[in-house]
Length: 199
Figure (cartoon, rainbow, N blue to C red):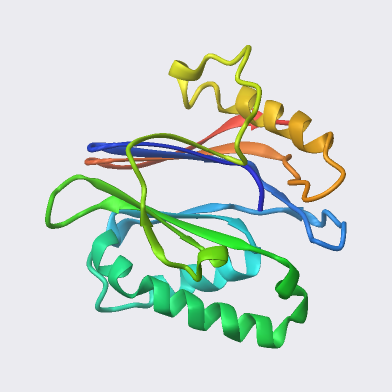
C-alpha cells in the first residue's frame, strides 16, 4: 500500500489512491484497489501498509450486521483490528516487519456530517478522529508546483511528487504507481473514477 490522499468536509469525502501492489520482499506483482465503498453504511474504507489486513478488514466490516454507520464501527474497530492483526501476524510472520493504517470515512447517523477515523498499527489501532481538510500520505516535503486547491484534479501531480520523493530514499521507501483512482462520497451517494496512469 502506498499513496493515499483524502479531503473531507461536513458534506463530502474524497479519497484518491494509487493502485500498485508491492510486497515488502521487493516484488510488484500487480495492481489492487486501495479504497472500497460500503454503500449500506455510506462509508469508504481505505488503507496504507499491509494489503492483507485491509482485505480481511473489509470482509469483517461488510459482514457486521450490527454496524449502522462510521461511528458505530468506530466503537468496536480498535479491539477488532488488534485481534485481527495478532491473528495475521501469527500466520504470516513477515507481517512483523510491516505497519498498517486503516481509514474510515462516512456519514454519521447522529450528526449527519462526514466523520473520518484512522487506526494505526504503531498506535495499537487506537481510534484517531481526523480533522476536516486535505490529508497526504506519505507526507510530501516539497509542495511546489502543485495546484493544491484543485484537488482531486491535482492528485496525479501529488502522487508523482510523492513517487520522486520516495524513489530517492534508501530505507523505508513507499512504492507508488499504477493509476490514480478517486472515490467521492456525498449525500447523494458515491462516484468512482480514474484520473489516469502514473507511470
